[in-house]
Structure formats: structure tokens, C-alpha cells
Image (cartoon, rainbow over all chains, first blue to last red; front, side):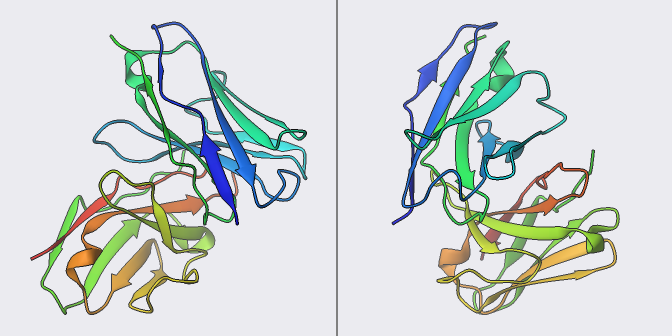
Length: 114
Length: 107
């Protein structure tokens, strides 16, 4: 069955970068685009971008343009989200999900202490 | 960027119908998705592409659009429907914003 398994929680210093992984099974990254969404504690959902290997297309939200990079490793069927120049307001749970919207990873908490 | 507006909260008695609005300029021209999120859990899509219901989602959940507003309706509301609900659009400008979310309280 389809599963998305994300990497574990991270604590990063301000100014650093973080890379969150999302290993998929039950399908290939060549078949479905992966979206990334984040949710700060107690707040709403924010769409960050999407990575479509089949169409060779990467789209970033204007809010994160220049700070976020989405990539994928087809050999391991793992998608990655890297966020740079971290600030305290980047503290959030980060999710990967399929373009069908049906399948989500379990979420990865990234904490950036102020 | 495209902005979606939702009421912060909606309250409804069990057995009644809850309606949650999602407003946005020309939302009728965009694909709208609705997500349910319960505390400590990842969101779950309950309506996608305006009015389609994924397998496993009760028929009590329905979606519609008119003018600048999309609406999620939940009929015969149950205690288990209490959650946060978010709308999202897929915009032709390639931004896919979420609304601010609506807390549904079952009285």
C-alpha cells in the first residue's frame, strides 16, 4: 500500500538549513508529484511547493521562493525538502503528501529556538 | 498571491447541517479541496476537485461553489466531525494556498 515515511524531528539554530526526507512506497516518484505543507504550532496549514519528476517541474510558493529547495532521489524513491536561513518562525511540523492529496507523511517537527 | 477567507469557527448541534464557507476572488474558476484535521493528526482530504468525495469519506460530506465562495457542507453532524477544516485552491498561477481554517464545534 501507499506510504510516505518522513525523517525524524530536528532542532536547528537560526541561520542554519534543514533537510527533511520523505521516503515513499507503493508507488514511484516518477508517477506522482509530491507536495510539501507546513503547520506552525497552533496555526494553520501553509503550502510550500511541489516537485513533479514526470513533468520535470518544481513549483514554489512565493512566500518560500529562494529559501526552499525540493528534490528527489529516484533510486531510493525519496523526496527531500531543504529550507535555508532558518528563523524561529520556521518552527513547524512539515508534511509531504502526494499530488492526489490522499496520502500524507506522518509529519516532521522542525524546531528553531529563538 | 491568492487569499482564501474562512470563518474562524462554526458551531452546530448534533444531527444538524454544518456549512463552512471559503471565500476568494473568482474561486469558481479554480479547483477547491477541503481537509479535515483532528488534534495531533495529519490532515485528511474530505472533498477534492470541488465536489468529489474520496473513498471512505461519508456521503454526509459535500462540496459546492458559487461565485466567489466555495462551501463544505456536513449533514447529520456527529461528535466525531469536530475538527479543524481547511480549504485549498489550486491556482493557475501555480500557487496553492490554504484558507486560515475553521474550527467546527459540535454542541
